[in-house]
Image (cartoon, rainbow over all chains, first blue to last red; front, side):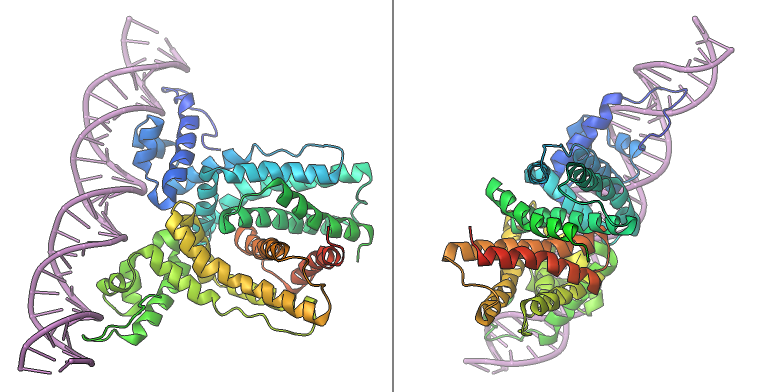
Length: 208
Length: 208
DNA sequence: GATATACGCTACGACTCGTAGCGAAAGAGC
DNA sequence: GCTCTTTCGCTACGAGTCGTAGCGTATATC
């Protein structure tokens, strides 16, 4: 996405620079926040010139989107044999990611900027939000294959339930860790999973 | 809070200016976002000099905290006779507030800045988060008085349940409206309330 | 009146964004 | 080997912002 087609003739780009810049962006975001992050500082941390940043990303916004998206792509939904275990595992992963100050500052700063910039908002949804719904879809498919959940009645309802479940899980965890500032202990994750499982299994058993 | 003790001798402050400045701050935040908001612009919108802003609030951060806190103080928990109706009513109020772009940008921008600035974070919790937990407490008390929920087993568990319920409600609504960008329709509020009521009544009926 | 504060205005230093121009480096194609 | 193309680091720049300072004036209390 950043460099769709590599250059054909001239001097090739430093392959290591992309990773170094994105890491430096997250690091700077952790220490300084969105408002405190400066392109010059990121360049120094990454060991490149400021102009190199602008040669690869058009603005601060796009750079941070790329940095955060790369971070969240590491989330995975494992099939541990039960819906409860799967949910607890992915929530634990998510919480661990969100406990890193760099991810905290990056995510919220991005969301905040996205509320005013429709283009950035769309980029955030495309690059960050939508890809993560795969986790809900994968977890439900596994549960259905194990017989823990019945198959969805129709395509439309399946999509709607993915959205509401994703909003509830992501929203609650994000709110607890970023807004309330409390850590997500194993006990809390267990309690939240219980809260989530009750209506999930019931609604699934008797839709309508 | 802003001016704890009024001045005793000199020229008194313009009483209307505070409200005008806070309103102008929210308006500017809606149009320009945190990054785009400038103190000079707010001053022009409010019809005062920039120095007047700094005479009343020490920085941009504090000004926005005050502007958002004032906005959220309008939320109320009404006793409508049933727990479901009470929850739906307060969620509807909250969603209506969050549908205003000025509140969206303000809240998220504030949360984002708060992740890096511990002092600001504490101010946000004191002035914005904690006061709103009164809604959960009031709603639960009313439900217990009506016999819909049993009384809490101990003080500590009561506080923990307030926290988890608050995180779930606020987090889910915020995430849906601000991150996913979907509006909170009456159907969605109803479905979410159902999802919330199941474990609430069950856990309350058989704690542990 | 004397005093003390708030007000509007202008100017300022320090900082950041994003761009432009320079010479040099590192590959591709002939 | 030689040319062409692109990237690189560096420096400098214009525009814009934060937060402060100084000035003269307005408006209150003592």
